[in-house]
Length: 193
Image (cartoon, rainbow, N blue to C red; front, side):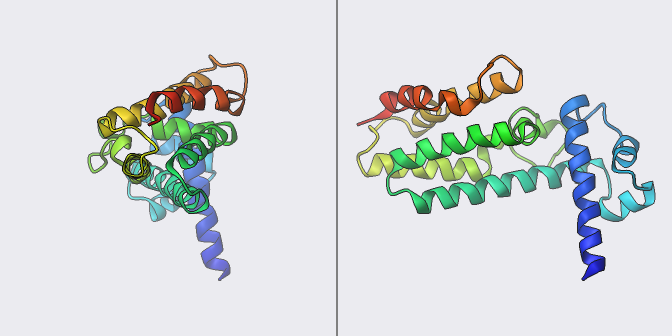
């Protein structure tokens, strides 16, 4: 048991340090040696956990994607209608950005296809598929008007995602949750039935 915990701690340390480096320096400007040094592990130890830098990047993306997907599934169960679900999703995205901007930056900003051949766009990942399902259900239930689903997705989530970019870039002085009511009102007015 202790051995597994230590292994998990080392792998987590590698991922945490890689995330910092990827978001601060960029993927291409970060070497395996940089990650190894920041993790305070030997190169051999690092390679016991990941075959290469791309494997670290893919694992990071997968972990962040899965955490967001699980949060969206919990939101879907907790809230009855699409309107409440969408607002809760935006709240979650805003709060997540404030708690861990690096993860959100890595998820939204990074052009994963430039270095992870197996990955698709973040906008085709599990969380965004779930978001689209919620929008489609909202249209089916008559909460949202019948417009092209991709247009509805952009109307609801496009502005808040842009706000996340601006917050990460330091262009918004206030924490994102303080913008929730106004940004939700704009999104809601654009799609309500």
